[in-house]
Image 1: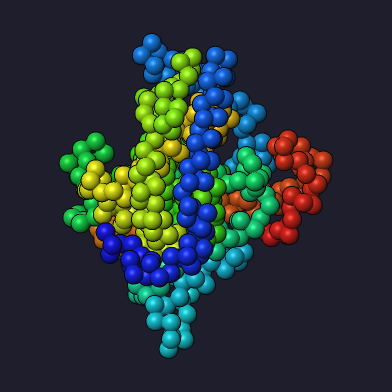
Image 2: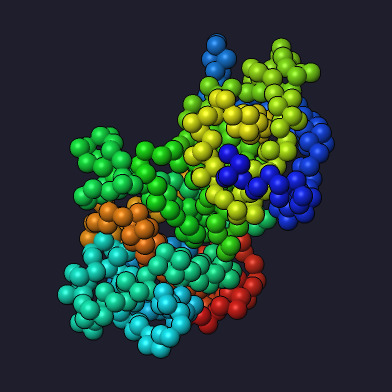
Length: 485
């Protein structure tokens, strides 16, 4: 395990400095942290149980298992700005991409893999054709045949020399930065003090033999496939994606996405049950993220409390079942901090570390420590989840957005909407990143179009279209981008 973390000798010599760089100095002494969590957990048990009888959405069976219903959001929560768009208005995809390139110069990210001694630049039509050929599942050669301004050799040369995963992610980041600088997307945020994000996987069949693909009769029948794991925020910015085996559990990759992007900074992140483990609860908290998954059968989850109050109050509706193993956290705190610092300083990825730990999870002290800490955070979250209807609705709404992003993926991939024609992992990642670039460009173009529509409308009429809790002075909403179009 030492090979996956910061070297023991370096950790011993530079521990204080590394903790400061990683923002983990406050966790160096576990006692104040555990004391704070003990107090917070006790208060949350009191609060949730005090409100339990008046909670109309909470149902408790005779065996103690509870169920929490979450009503759908009312119709007023629907997008009030949608009717500013014309009912029917078809725009060529090449025009959309060209518009966004004029806005944020995303094509400048497609540098030649040999950055020196290369004077000739690729033409914009060749780069746009490459993005559409790979992102729409059409294929490079077929795209060249249906393109009037690009030859097959020119297109293949551009794709082979300039379409690296780093370049395409840099182009995505340029589009994301342009949207992040706009004020208009923030109208879709529930809370301006924190950004809610979510992630979810989507299965795709793979043609031919692939080392990365795995078999799953449920999804592919007799075939094999992979999963595209996509991250989206509440402004509909698709800020990261990665390709994983269809057999891998998604929870191992949640941290990778949260730590990857420097444009979108998540404050609270949601997944479905496939993205949840107790270890992820503990790690996200130590990395300063709030983890809010939608857990299937949440009433059957084991709840924990610190030892002095292990039984809890007999009158409680929702009771703890086990005591927190805080002794393990105290005993292995140094190894735990070393693991978190490794991930926070990006010396290794969480998925690589979990892949190493998982086969020995029951025996490995480090995994058990991370799990014990995560059980505290999980218990706090479940109690808040039961008590807070607005939180439950926000989680559901954000997960619906990432599900819609998955449907958007299939709509864009007109050539092969449910399969990858590429067999190699790197080629699949490039194709998926091109698909995400197209989606982000369409979303950015829609925001520019919406800003233009608001700019053309009278002030009072434009304000009436905005959600009530976001009605601000018109000039503030438009910001510096009122003439972006």
